[in-house]
Amino acid sequence: MIKKIKIDNFLTIKNLEIDFDKHFSAIVGESGAGKSLILKAISEVFSVKNDTQMIGNFGDFCKISIDFDADLSKYGFFERNFSIEKLRSKKPYFDKSASKSIDI
Image (cartoon, rainbow, N blue to C red; front, top):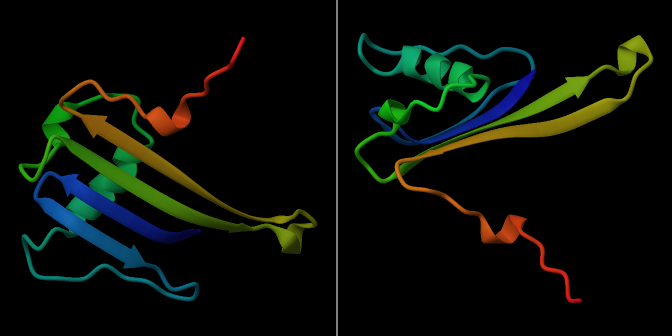
């Protein structure tokens, strides 16, 4: 189950964070409010394409994060929470915090 989605600079969405309820969630709004963009953002996280056209006009990158809660305890498995994040950039991106150095 999706617990939370965070969207930054995706098409016309500048910054959006949605916490989904465990029992019921619905995305409602007027025509053109961005309901379909939220679903498109979710599908983009799982896409293998690197389409920079999805990046909005609010910066050089877009970031989509989805937090999941996979409660499989009723099936004899463990409960697990995990996140998936996708970053797309118009410029080359290097995450220094992800790199490691080794002294020789």
